Amino acid sequence: MVDVRRFPRSKYPFYAGDALRSALAETGINYVWLGELGALGVRGPRAGCVESHTFDVYVWRLYHYAPALFQLEELVSLAERHTVAILCREENWRACHRQFLADYLTRQGLEVVHIRRVGEERHVPTPCYRTYNPPPLDLVKRVYRDFQKLCTNSSVYLFSGALEGGEDVDVIVYGFGGDLPPGYDAQILPTPADDLFHYFVTHTGVLICGRAYVIDLEKALKEEVAVAKARAHVFLKSSDPVAVCKSAKGLVFTAAALLCGAAQVYTWARAARCLAERGLEPPPYFKRCLSPPPLQELKKWARYVETLADVIAHVSGHR
Image 1 (cartoon, helix red, strand yellow):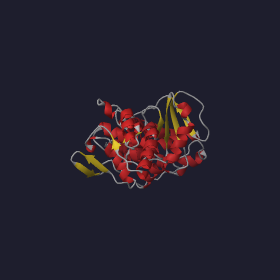
Image 2 (image 1 turned 135 degrees about the vertical axis):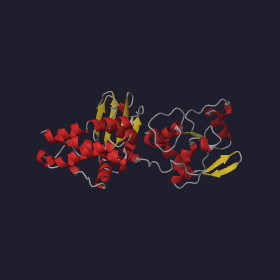
Image 3 (image 1 turned 30 degrees about the horizontal axis):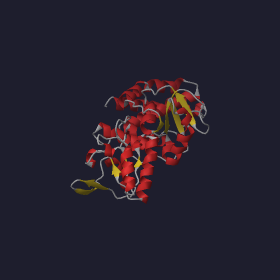
Image 4 (image 1 turned 120 degrees about the vertical axis):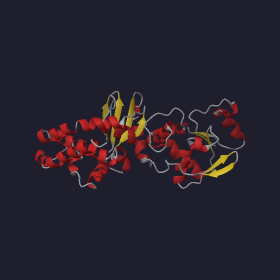
């Protein structure tokens, strides 16, 4: 028996976690509580696949919060080795977060049957069935282990192409300072700003620990559009290769977010593919602005940068 209530309590004492554990043990049934798979009181961004705000946030959390990912892995492992009954409060699975756990179990090739008062029902996938794929768990576990000392007073996010098999392992720590573990491209910031970069971090990254931040996407896009011309000006006038590169990179992501949707372009590869499909493929050296090519090489792309700024102005004017 796997209890997926956030808090294993009940107004009926028999259904409290400890009482269930004892009663089930007498019949030879093991009781396992996986509280991180519960839905009560969860906070965070929305996944965008279901109308219910609570359920939509829950689906995001299921695939973007490290402790939930670990318990999701444990649930799958148990289901692969045993016959598992998943327990929550609601009799009707369609009114319960169990439906989203059933989605994932079904995607793993496991058979899910819902037990109702009137009989059994085979699971019918929800609109969230193919919303997300879990990130590489070995990587998430490594970051979770290495950044534990910063979790007391901070929110730690793993993001970028590493979540899709890329080489870059970027980590953002929102909160107080501390010693950053070696081997990561990590930085500490006080809080996330309302811009596209922090939207990507907090909505598409994995929350390793701490509170989940929510960035208003429309506000973030407005901020990016407002500075697009200024970024183009920096590219044209600045003599600092890093500043020139960063200004172009910001325009690449802003244009891609407007053209393809921010949720689809949260890595360089995705943003570049979006623009390439529209005849606007960016040069690869805009990707790594901490070690940019010589200034004269960057400046060769002045017309391209001006075109991006024009595209941003045009598309944003029709939103």
